[in-house]
Structures are given as structure tokens and as C-alpha cells.
Image (cartoon, rainbow, N blue to C red):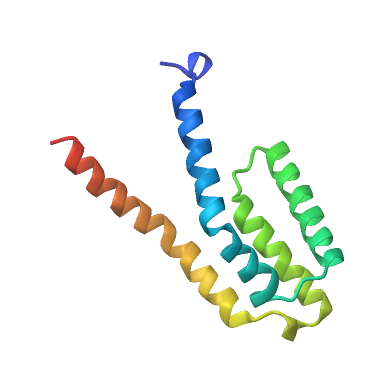
Length: 122
């Protein structure tokens, strides 16, 4: 199958949408609290600035064809907003924990995918 004829089945789209919405419904509040209260106390104007910066960054990356994580972009934008207030406004210990989680995500996902593949392809 070549890239021109590639199509994602409707059931896959629906399953992904359901998984994302259930994940947001069950854990989204915790992420919002962590980013908007625990890392930095955001005011509405701060959220606007972070969202605008993230949107511009994501659009620029899309135009360049660069793959970026929207989660990483918005988190970095929130840290940037907090840093503009003052560097001590950001809880850098929490930011470090998030960075470690980002770094570990790729190898952990690869290991889990390998295990699942071994189970199903035997």
C-alpha cells in the first residue's frame, strides 16, 4: 500500500476519539490542575498568552513539516509564561519531573509495544 492510497478505517478513528475523550474525562482535570495551579498559578491572561504562543508554534511546525508534540509545546509555553513573571514563579522541581516523564515515554512505549508484539505474533 502506498501513501496515496492509504486510508484510516472509520472504526479506528472512532476508537481513537473514544479513547482520547475517556482519557480527558477521567484524567484531564488532574493535568489542568498540575499545569495551571501546581506548576504555575495561571491567570486568564496567562492562559491566553500560553495558548496563543503554543498555537503559533504548532502552526509554524506544521508549515515546516516538523513533528511536534502539542502537549510538550503547551507545557513549554506555560513554563515560558511563568518565567516571564519571574523565574521563581515556576515550580522547577515539577517541571523536571515532567521532563523526566517525557524522556522515559519513548523507551517505555517501545518496550511495551515490543512485549505486545511478541505476545500477538507468536
